[in-house]
Image 1 (cartoon, one colour):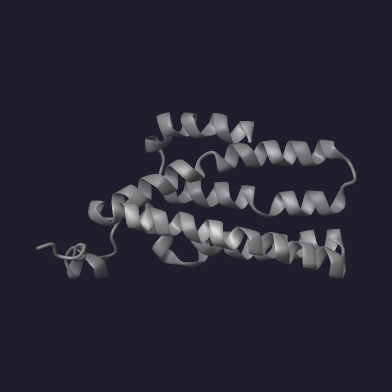
Image 2 (spheres, rainbow, N blue to C red; image 1 turned 135 degrees about the vertical axis):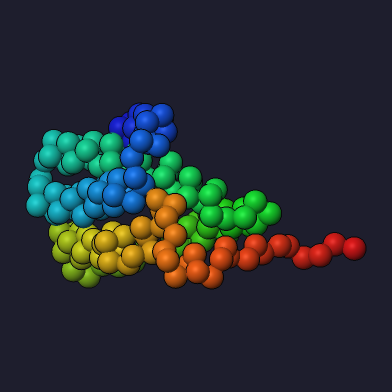
Length: 160
């Protein structure tokens, strides 16, 4: 946590020098699967602490990158709705993850649960590599998009 807290301001200061998509992709791959594998195969805290510190450094770039993309792509008049809905969704599903983890640990044991959850996490973190739309984080527009012109701006309900 301390590593991520230190990395976020540092990335905020120099992050504009790098393309977002590769930095984000590398960071999320470093921060995803390794902790689950190390936790599943070790009985001591030292390897896990080192892994978590490295992941903390990697995760420090995620929030600034995603916040920048959000502020650039979501129209200003919808920003509060989009950010509120995103936050609400995260808070809604968080208890379900804890419930599922408890069920899996009880059913198949902790090491197996860690490896299965890590595998699912790996699949999710591969999305920026598999789906080309993630490359738009760099602010590039595909030729298909530019031929159609800019996307229409959605406005809120009309007020009388």
